[in-house]
Figure 1: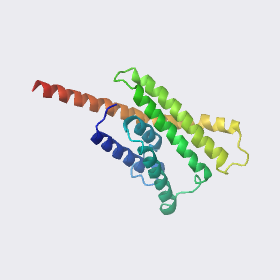
Figure 2: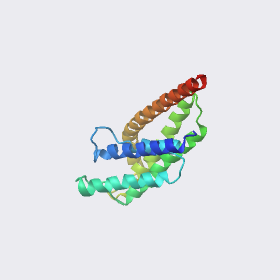
Figure 3: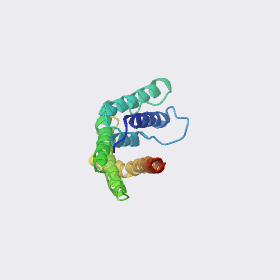
Figure 4: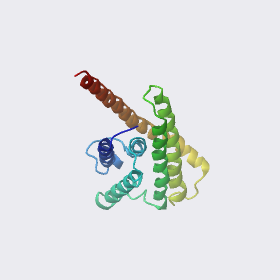
Length: 190
């Protein structure tokens, strides 16, 4: 994926805005599920600078802090386990990086994309959901069976949301790529 610096900047800004307007419905003016997981995965795929990951994590943390401090959102998720979001989101970002290295402009890349998303999301949930279960202090006696139960209940929903956002992004990527391909052909003919 060789995107220009300008395109990476535009995509980065779009991803940051998408996370801001959907994260936990804290400030949302549109009723969309959180795009945070998709934002981290797509940033890994489309944005080359490594500083993007910490910048997005800081944005997510500031949005959560602002929601708790000023919007009256519950602080239930704020615990020592919050820091498990670093490896959780990193697994999505690294999954995106891995996919970007293997991506080809072929229809068969969709299978690779799907597998990469599923694996990245599963690892992400192990860190985020498992981290919260075992390290938040909210559960008296967490067990592996509790984690497996939560995994089977919550991961499909997270995967569905992630798949929706990634699907829309893939469609946009194809459409924009086709548009620029046709534009280049018409410029060559001129």
